[in-house]
Amino acid sequence: MRDKSFLYYENNTHKNVRAGHSYFVASKLFLLANPITIREKVSNVLITFGGADPMNYTDRLFKIIKAPQYGHIHFTVVLGGAKKNAQELHAKYTNIPNIDVIHNISNMAEVMCRCDVAVTSRGRTGFELAMLGIPAISIAQHEREALHEFICEKNGFNYLGVDPDNSVIDAALTELINLPQDRREELQLRMLKNDLRNGRKHFLNIINTR
Image 1 (spheres, rainbow, N blue to C red):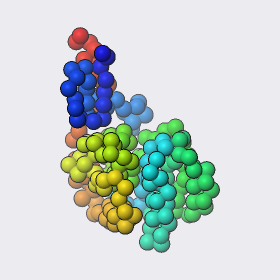
Image 2 (image 1 turned 180 degrees about the vertical axis):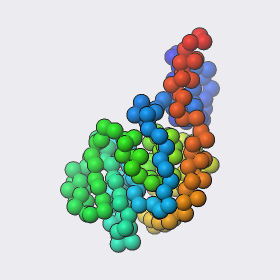
Image 3 (image 1 turned 120 degrees about the horizontal axis):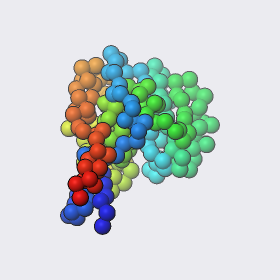
Image 4 (image 1 turned 30 degrees about the vertical axis):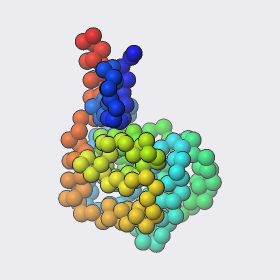
């Protein structure tokens, strides 16, 4: 059995399985990017729910962020390549002045670095946000994703569970946008204390010592 890396810690009974954030292998684009600077006020919010977004969280976020109370905030919404209604959402929301809708991008690190905070799923994107120190809200797509223990308050995330009510998402987004600079800096420190840049090296060390 070859060495394998999993996001999840549970049931890790196989000696050749490496689980958790220490074995996350980041793309080179993220390794080349520096953590963001925490600005005095939040002005740019990233919304991204992976390639397919099976729970259609993106659709629900569009309904939330088009409200007048968010008119002063710029939103970048990334639609994954497998999002079934991506073209429909792009056509419906692309003309709203404070919302940029991007479909199937090639350099996610560059897009993330332009944002102050984020809303995302509970998968690999959480590792990438943590590498860049971007405070984030996380919503799991299903019960399996809910087992991804790294995405939690201890590591700088506000995890809302699986399929929370829109009112819960709305309240969490408002709270994150209005967090003072020092609180967001604290969340960033929680993220950056984790070693997320050396997963590739950890694997090579295992291979080279065999």
